[in-house]
Image (cartoon, rainbow, N blue to C red; front, top):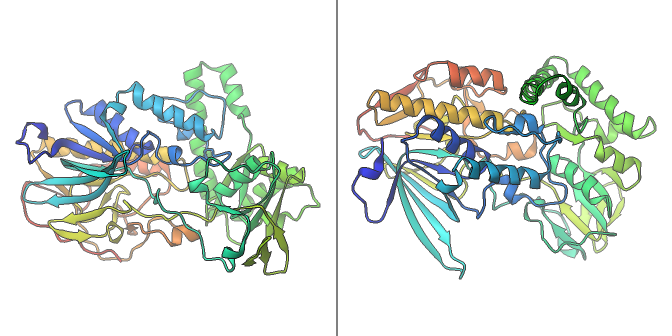
Length: 503
């Protein structure tokens, strides 16, 4: 399976596998390829200049994990730090160290933005074209070919961001920033800050900025906010009773089970979960605070993502009058700040638009199958990893409801199983072929606005086209069930492919 032995095609570099992205998924892919397929050549193409993906991109105050680090860690390199919700810089350092420790960093080409991926059925090969930005502002190109692509570029546009159109925004005399593009020179100490949004980013920004500024979180509608003990008391008890590796494994599986429990109880007994979340908020904010207005959504838990905060830090900032919450809609910006629809004036020196991101698969990358341009968002997920009618291609992402790494890692393990089956049987191509024309639905069943705007592949309603929402179900589907399950077509032929649109 080593393409390096083939003839050079005009300066094109040849690898068995091209991995796109050096974030969590990309490191998982590199590790699993090296672990099981030592003779497989691979390269990781990363558009940024460092390992980390999201965690290298996000530099806003207080940036941290929104799931516990014991389930977010790489399973092949445990995180033994004391944190539950780890800070962004620590995660970035952990990822960089992991890439260096296992030699994965040596396989990364930094500053390589993938702009086009072209599949040839005749050659059973992908050609991947990249652009490289030079320090002097010029751009050069580099081309790679491979047998298989593993897209590990995540699920949102790292270059773009989403900001709604606000009336009068040009009149505002202060500064407006988006968390995704946080300016290094922003001094907010002693300033009046309004953070627009009620998602995980806002929940992180508000308590962090409120240490030195007064912050108002302006939300159109509330989110569920669940407080966690940090550090974890259960983890501390296990550490006293058991050897460190054993205690760590116990805590990890307990946390996986807890995530699944909350997810399914949110469906089966939403009133109970609502009560649990509300009770914790009242403990910090007091009975006199209007919890139901500001932290009592009309939808059920996990209809949208739950927001996790350590030790109630957001609630503490509110209780100490360093921050407040306004639940209202924006009527207009003015010179002094924002006027809400109820007529309230929110004066501000800085407005932070924590209003979400553009979610899409391989943004700004053209994909061609036998010369025909295709939109990957028009495809159907196969086992949540492969895409219908796209040969020799996997798209690895994480969970929206559980830790990202859980899904990313077992997806990479599944890709290795697929590659093994190709080699063991002398096949050159593998393609999920959709034969069931039954109903489809979005791959993420969440009602959040940024999810509704997302341009993702869809899912079916039956296995193997169904996207599972928890680690245990995926572990069975991806690591235990047969690789050849369902409509997975292996071939040695060169027949051209036509991609059917999933609707």
